[in-house]
Image 1 (cartoon, helix red, strand yellow):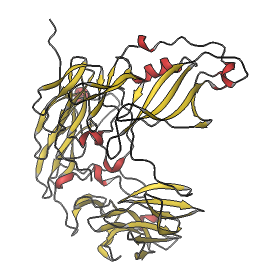
Image 2: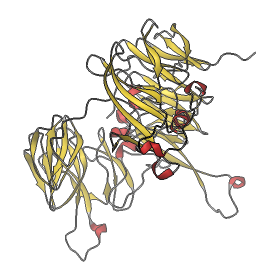
Image 3: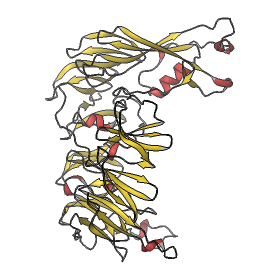
Image 4: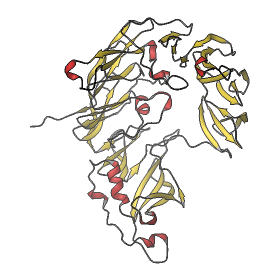
Length: 496
């Protein structure tokens, strides 16, 4: 579950027209809006951009590291004492038989002519269109001094239009947000985050668990290892599924079928497979095991999700979907309401998209289209609208939205007629539903797409902004920020 503090930062990025500065939590300007792009403060410094170049200011607005970098990260580390930056250096090809001698023409790129309002992809393209521009990557300290340098060159392989980025002869992936340093993999073939301070590791075809330093904690003996949830992970060995604690103790073994997903609310979804090979898989049944491996809810459903914050979705023998609680009680819904689920071949889609935070449950209602809206080939068409009920089936928010997200920090994104906004846990609209985009986190650390506006705050994934109590929006085709009360940290000057 994603849950974040709602305390706002001391200084909040604030846009006036096309320029950015910083205000306090009372929306009083502290640093005047004169930058083309700004970032959140990390420690006592923030990265700011003028034109296409970056530098750093302190909380008084004083420039403390010159604006000269083509790219710059936030300061990171326990003491915010390091940052990664990129400088552009133009080189002229020389004789001697090196690889870049094959580049017949050196571009005349001048970064100062690049329009700062252009997207970062286009600005990158301008740089990469000149094969003689080298990007020197530095790690700098808090005083702006270089403490490490790694340089790499943009090459055009085989004369093709596409380019590859190379670092010391090895391909690299350029990371835009600096997280904690990569853990010591200690020779493992695979090293994947498993949650709760552990990672799944694989070596010689077998899986186990290690801590973030690479020290092995659970022996490498399983065919598969899942993520930890509520202190328990599910591993697989042959046809058996094993529930493990963080010390590697095997809590129970399940060999009647498949364990699906992770432990939530003390239960894990179990698919009991019909062992009769002549029988249809449709006779397989779903139920829920407790941490002892006992059926807390017997295997009786044709389909089921994991539990999420006290509720799951099941499909009964009559192909009817229900919300149930951890005691297997059904949530009674009004006859015109349905549960919006999409069935997979093996099990239902992610329950966090169906069951909401704080006990609110997603529902939908179908509305017949008007005759004049129907096409000649259609005899029966529906409009679908979404809303929420509580655990008693009582309507909290009527089905009036074209699409809804999930609740995080007590707010949820809703969409009406292509415009996006927020509602609170009581179903009340926060501010206005008017934004072209409103970027809320996806559940359980999903990958985030890069948004079409490659400017302010694209540096941060939505969950990183929400940690600061802020949400990134697009309004009138410009980026802005709002808080969880719907207050806007941007303004459009009146046009005379």
